[in-house]
Image 1: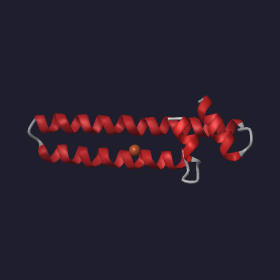
Image 2: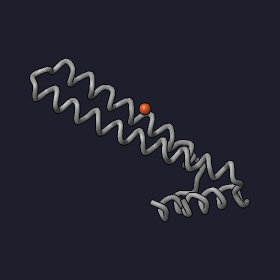
Image 3: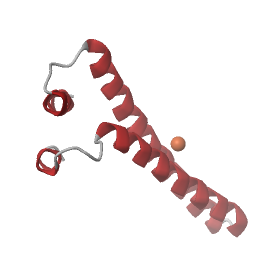
Length: 92
Ligand SMILES: [Fe+2]
């Protein structure tokens, strides 16, 4: 969280307000949720395939791919395209 506060403060050149901090926290949580969902769908695809259900496995894999797109959407908000690369690389 500390690095996110710093990121946002630098981007905006101002001190973050409580609602802004909460929004960043919510975006980070949502991002993590998308990643968890992605892994779960991949795992369920593996189980379906092992059980011989290829059609279901493919559906789980397609759904897993969508979760990655959702995660990218959150990242677009957390790290806008106009962010300075130097700063982003320091916070990975
Ligand atoms: Fe999602």
